[in-house]
Structure formats: structure tokens, C-alpha cells
Amino acid sequence: MSDATSPTPAETMVLIVGAGPTGLTLACELARKGIPFRLIEAGAGPQPGSRGKGVQPRTLEVFEDLGIIDRVLSHGRMAMPMQSTGPDGAVTLGGAEPESLRNRPDIPYTTSLITPQWRVEQALRSRLAELGGDVEFGTTLERLEQSDDAVSATIVTAGEKATIIARWLVGCDGGHSIVRKQSGIAFEGETREGVRMLVADLAVEGLDRDAWHMWRHPEGAVSLCPLPSTALFQYQASITPGQNAETALENLQAILERRSSRTDIRLNEPEWSTLWRANVRLADRYRAGRVLLAGDAAHVHSPAGGQGMNTGIQDAHNLGWKLAAVAAGAPDALLDSYEAERRPIAADVLEFSDARLAQALEQQGPSTRRDASTIQLDVGYRGSALAQDDRGDAAELHAGDRAPDATRLADADAEHRLFDLTSGGRFTLLDFTGTTTVDAAGSDLRTLHIVEHPTRPDEIADVGGHLAQAYHATPRSLVLIRPDGYIALITDTGDTHAVADYLARIH
Image (tube, rainbow, N blue to C red; front, side, top):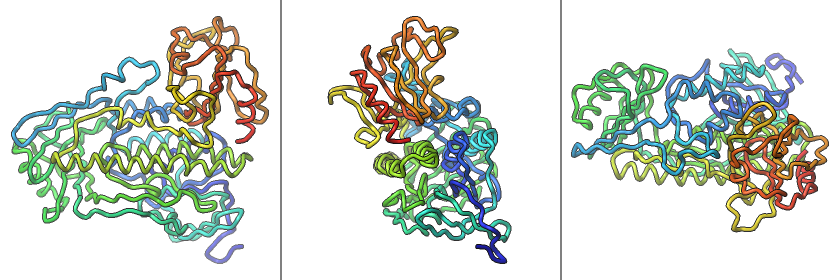
């Protein structure tokens, strides 16, 4: 139905509200699967500011799968040194690659990447354009209503209203999400007025760009982190009740001089600034009928530990293949696994970032420690309805775990990494028997037969033994890897029926 202010409704499979890193990742996932969608963003254009600047190794693996890893890495710096100066002038160094992660064939990225968030969004928008998608900037969601079959969304662009009819609507529209509010989803938690932070992007004179510099002081911490691929630094200063919270240059300079005891560092006028307030909240559910939430619309927390942007991107990576599968005819229940898998992860992130924030406040500054707890490679879904294996409890690797990488996999022409062969958002079966055939009618399955002397395109040799080691495989093992890089199924008995039945259940 249409009226004078609402043209004939437009039909699409998925409407994504919000074009930050989460919404853009989801759009890329749908675009490469050929699923019709629209991506709307209330802002008039790309958002300025560095904001989230730490990209964790697991997210880098997602970017490799999406085909943007090279452009993201080219605008960032891995393992940036962290130099923290205490009130007594003592300097603590950190940021080095964890010793336990060095030279690991199963882990291609071992430290976080520092890059401004707008660079991440730029890379995702470019990839989306290559896949035939775009962002509808300056378009707001005014109202949504849903039925058993669809969601009706009223949008406004340049004062003109229109209606979009979508089979699914995904709110990626941040902590103040209108999607979440109109869907009646509670956002449990608290706003901590006593914990605030000044953040600004600005040029700095008198300070080298070789490290992330931090100063701890009894009144609070201040830090200057060089932003790779720019001439700017990100300035951060904690603000407690009664302290001046203005973002004016004069106040930023005064805080820096008091807390660093240095007058030789000169700040320039900020190009972007904000006052961050500590919100710690988690949506009580990620789905209400045909509406789903992802990213900050579902969870907000302290930036301590650099988890926020990464968690949202991984939300989208998890949801994207499932939405695409359901759009292609898979059972609707597949979407229920999204909340079941991702909400516990967000709850853990809230707890982790809270602990890191408390530690930072106690020490009057961010921790220089970087270890396996921050890089999200241990995020997994053991116990999920989508995880199935016949291994005993003592096994190191189970279904639901992140699928490890491996090097020195040779076909008839060259050597490859496993991630080179599994990218692209498809199911992949690792056949350690070398000869197994699985009846996977109707599924987009790629099979890699592990043999000694490959002669066909679907055969590879595990030259270095890294693949068998990473997967703790026997000559009868079959390992099914999900489109988002997690292990769906492991059978060490060569049970082809288990693989076929699994694929049939979700297609």
C-alpha cells in the first residue's frame, strides 16, 4: 500500500541499519553470497575519527576471508611498542609479540594491528563496492513493524519517506539503536558517570611516532598513540568527577602537561574529538521475530582490551552465512544459533573489558600487556547445536573451535596455506582418508583430499605435517569447516553419513 508520502514499498531480502564496521561486514557477507539487501546509514557520509583502533588477530582472519587483509595491513602497524611512564619516571615497555605465539603455522596473525577505525570502514566499503553493493548515506529508520513473513520499515532520506519491505532486518546501529528500542529488546546494564575519557585525533609536535606513549599520574592517565597511515595521534585522557571534561585544545594540552610532566610536547587543534562515557550493557536477546541485532546495538562496554569493534565484526561474520543460508532455503532455526553462539561471547567480553578497565584505573593507565587473552583466537562455540564430533573430552581440538591454519600444503603446482584454500565463505571438508566422497547434494561444499602425491585440483599434500598436527588427525579423520572459519564437525571414524546429515540439516 502506498500514499502521498510513501511510494510503493521496495522489496529486499535483508535491510541492514547502520554502516559501521559491523553493518559493512554483514553487507559484504551477503553480497558475496548474492543475497539482495539494502544498507542504510543515518550519517551523511563516512564517520570521521579514529575511534576503535585495535584490530585483533581473529578479526584479521575474518578480513583475510573477505579479501581485504592486504589493504587493512597496509594502513596499520602490527605489534606497536607501548611505552608507559609512571609517576616516578620509571618506564615500562610492552606490546611485543607473545613468545608462545611465535612461529606457529596454525596462527597467521599473532598480535593486534593499530589502524584508525575509519580505515577499516574504508576497506570494507571498497570491498562492498567490488561486490556490487553500496551504502545509502543520509537515510534514517523512522519506524519498523513486522509480521510473520516480513518487516516493514519506514525510512527517511532528504525529508522524503519511503517504505522498505524486507524478509529480515538487522540492527547494526550502535548503542542508541532505534532498531533495538522499537523491537522492545531490553538493554540491561549501567552507565558509569564516574568513568569518562577524552578522545581526540590531532597532530603532535615534539614526540616520536615509534611507540604508543602513556603517562600515569595520581589524577589519571593520558596517552598519545600514533595513527598509522596518517600524520595524527589519538589522544586519550581519563576524566573523573570534578575534572575539566572540555575537548578544547587548551584543556587537552593542560592535562597532558600535568600528567606527563613534559612541556616540550605541543598538541595541535583536534581534527576530531569526543567525550566517552562508560556504558556496560548487553541486550537480553539478539532476535525478536524477523529482527536481529549485531555489534554495539547488542552490546557496549569499555574499550579496555580493544574488543568492541572486533566483537561486532565477528557478530556479522557469524550471522552473515546463516542469513544467506536461510534466505536460500535453510531452516529458520539456523538463525537461533546466532544468539546462542554470540551472546555468551559478548557477556565474556563485557566481563573481560570491565576487569581490564578496573586494572587500568588502579594503575592510572592502560596496561602494556598483550597476550592470548586479548586476541580472540580462543573464541569458540563448543556445545553449540552446530558443533558435532566423536572425540573424547581429553581431545585438544573439538567441533566449535576456531579452525587452525596450516602451511606447506601442496597441490600439483604450488604450496599454499590452508586459509588460502578455505576462504570465500563456503563449507570445506578436510578429508584425511584421501578418498572419501560425501553426498552433499544442494550444499556448496569444497572438499580437500589429503594425499601424498596430488594430481587433481581437489587434492593436497600435507608436506610439512602441519595440517595433521593442527587438527590432531588420524588417517580416517574428516573435518568439516564452517563458512566463518569454525569447526562444524569432526569424525575420526570416517563417518561420511554424519557429514552428509549435518549438511542436510542446514541446507
